Length: 283
Ligand code: ADP
Ligand code: MG
Image 1 (cartoon, helix red, strand yellow):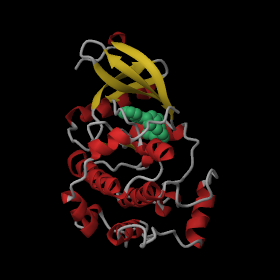
Image 2: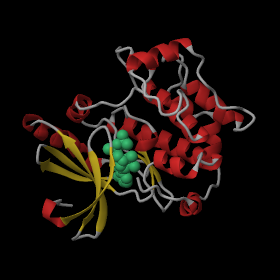
Image 3: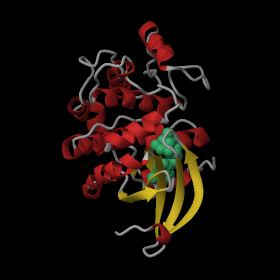
């Protein structure tokens, strides 16, 4: 697919994130709806980002949002992605309440499969697992997006980053070296958030700096999912993801072999039917 700006009919903005704005668009020649992401980047590193993104043309997984192409635009790079019509899980739970347990099971399974593809086939870690980077479409597919494929893109976003440390693992906040185990921590917090219908670590609406987050995590006992309200196997998986010491935290292969994941893999859940019942937030 040869993407050209003049072939895209730009639609309405879908959200403002750490990295920039996401807008909906229609690729007229193929009638493909797309999500366009703009990444601000200095002139000299735009080519580098575009080069690093090339590998995404070979990325082919039902658990990862497809990449259509990218090109330089204004003072940055425009990235054209598969449009996921039901958007991200943060919006979904804010509008519809906590995500039903059977759906959480499929989210768990899908994210783990997506991470497996990233680690084994693309050899990258995700670095930004959170509810807004897990997307849903009305066919019932659950896919991850916004992973750190491009070193320069990660840097560019980090340079303009003003958000919180909400999903960062303690070892990453500490500024030390971090690994794929960091994604596992973020997944634990994310699953807990979807189950409870709120961010689990803090008073609603209160933003924490890295420093505040670290002292919170070091001093407070981490919350757990209540075993009387959720499947014990889910509670166990989440609490293992949130082990503070990365050496003791399970690796991806341990989670893929976890009882909860194996149950979810074979569970019959009609995500398409659930997807048809939810309200999409227009904010
Ligand atoms: P963040 O992930 O921090 O919220 P982003 O800039 O990545 O910020 O995305 C902004 C919003 O746009 C997301 O919350 C999500 O709802 C929506 N979005 C991002 N990518 C897509 C996509 N491919 N399809 C549909 N919606 C998307
Ligand atoms: Mg995102």
